Amino acid sequence: MYWADELANQIITSGKYKPYWVDDMKTPSGRVHIGSVRAVLTHELICRALKDRKKDVTFSYVLDDHDPMDSLPTYLDEKEYRQHLGKPLYQIPSPEKGYDSYGQRWGQEYIEIFNSLDVHPEIIWGSQLYRSGKMNDSIKTCLDQAEAIRTIYKTIYKKGKPENWFPFSVACEQCGKLSTTVVTGWDGEQVSYECNPHAVVWTEGCGHHGQVSPFNGSGKLPWKIEWACKWKVIGVTVEGAGKDHMTAGGSHDVARLICERVIHYPVPFPFSHEFFLVGGRKMSSSKGLGSSAKEVSEILPPYLIRFMIARVKYNRAINFDPAGMTIPDLFDEYDHAARAFWQKKDKRLARIYEISQVKGSPSKNHFLPRFREIASIIQHPGIDAEERFSKLKGSKFTGEERRVLEERVKYAKIWLAQYAPEEQVFSLTTSISKAADRLSLEQKEFLAYVEELLSEEWKKPEDLQQALYERTKKMKIPTAECFEAIYLALIGKTHGPRAAWFLLENRKLVLKRLKEVSKKSLKTTRET
Image 1 (spheres, rainbow, N blue to C red):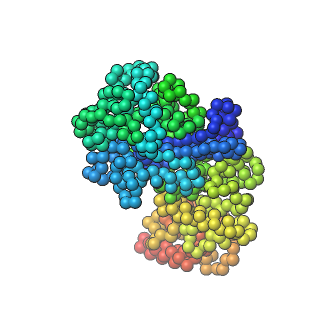
Image 2: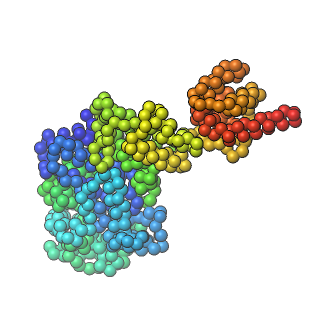
Image 3: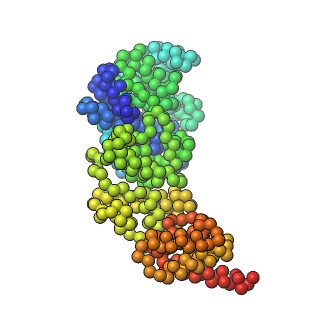
């Protein structure tokens, strides 16, 4: 059974997680990393699995723009933004016009990426949860039970928190920073606080002391405590997290005990999803490192991003490196899953294909032109890709098949330009390659024969290919070395696309190049 269906069955059969409210959350601290997309898609796939079982499900996503900026992404103007370190994201100006805040700028990118993948959660802004007063009861409960929370920390972390520690941070009334304030007292209505210049190493507090009501957005709860409180305020019954949060002693352990001992709310159905690695490394949104989701969405179609994530069980890491043959291999896997769905063969593969689709149910059975063949064909201007694949299919393309081909041509061009291995990029060199100097006398003889063949008319490339093979049998060198001569002379590589097709599609240029090679060989022979 497919993993999302397994989790959906566990949720339903337990009878403990009604009403079904699936949630995920993230701090919009910078560009959306592809790892965040794995997280939201994992939740969305569970949501789909529940809906496929005729269950009413609410799906939400919290953009925690009330969190403070705690580091500067590499793409920000450090001089301009260093002063804002420690402030809530919703109170920091956007680096671009058209957005109310820094948090909204990046939060909106999250929303756009999600929507492009046919993921449409109800968006909840963390700042609105606080400013609207929805978090007020939780704030009061946590401040009233500060001692119980200190005990929880001591239970989990042994050392715990100091006796005068309170689970709340105020946005300093003077400098606006959250990260530098320390609450020193709570009288049931107001908290007293100080803005400590040395509270953190990455920004400075202003030294201000004051008293303020903790309600309606004047501050926030610590993340591990806030997580549990948001579950209760929103009504969440299903929410997983990355394995770093779900390990023993991690954020989830604190949130679980807050639920059980402080706010008395049932812990949502938990699950731990693995990291999304790019080239073997875990990346960070706030630091601006690694492949952003936007960048990945420019090199892969939406359904393939969904497929890439859906095909791997949630508790196994995904390691994506667009360089090399990763993208052609991914298209091959997708096509295999599509055929499994259409032919009703492998149920698991078919389900992965089905759940990977965007905007509606899967399309009916149709011809899928292989991505790597498209990448080869489009490197030859004389070839009509649709005509070539129509012959392979055995009939004319439908409108849907034409759309698929056009889309794959678009992504194949991107792959060739940015990520394809050198050996996959085939184009006639502008002049005789230095590699042609390595040609043996026998290879040059074979090229002379190729030149003769190309002077004839060939209706079918298959016939020319057969003629080439027949000639190699008469040569004193292996067949591979004969064909190697063609590629060395024309593209400067030891291998390339199918010879006859390549030769005929570029006949004029090929003949010119072969004559140049022959002329150079003759000159070299005379000189020696």
